[in-house]
Length: 343
Image (cartoon, rainbow, N blue to C red; front, side, top):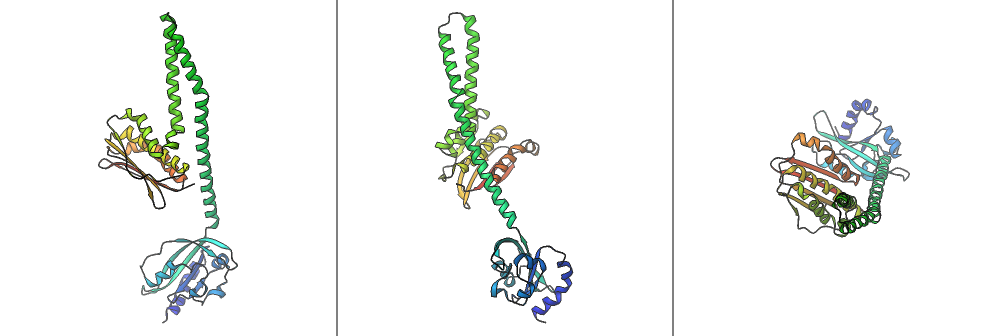
């Protein structure tokens, strides 16, 4: 029995099942001849079954059969389903589609490979929506950074300058006073103003750190560590001596905010002697790693810190990246984030 006839004999057993699927389904035999093409495949690709059945896929590659991955299965039979692929395919009249295709080996009664099936699904609108969402996310993040810079600028040029001026006036007034009873409450007011000035400066740094713009992500993270170092005086920050890749302001903002959260968590919880930070080029994007040699995160504490971890993960995913988190009592805690280059 020829491979083609064996496929034809096998197909009737599956046709009732295949007809129940809304996805586009087609099949080829070991010679690369199209032997099955359902109604959904006709609607998706524009080719009628009568136009393609009996034709070899190397004649015009209709539907999903342009994929080299598909044809390679006929040469190398792994015995497993081939992973789904996403590809652009042209319909009969020239319209381009983005489709997801899953190829699966077809076997005869003896278990031998007799052909290959393909299940196609149109994901054009899904991908267009995904690209639109990613673009909107990038715009929102960029706007967020611009608003943060404007807020910091307004604080610096407005209320902060007024507070500094009032603090200086109080200091001058106190120098000219002889009455301790009057001076004491004024000293308390001046101390309160000075504390407010420091709080505002801290807020400005967290909202829009100047080091991020002029010195880069690692320098900004170093300043953040210095401001919080009293949380754990025995902890040392090591900024890996690696060539820090150039990056857009949006990439820098994302990596800084994730790195800041990771460093803060380490200082609060890890009891680590060292925190290491590195940024490298990786897989066409940027990878930030923050690791410590601390006590790790117990399940109860991980649950309490879930919001911070999720915030870091959400920030990475908003930029089209991903975050990995690992923690145990032997290796400490490691946060690794990858984001694609932007801008």
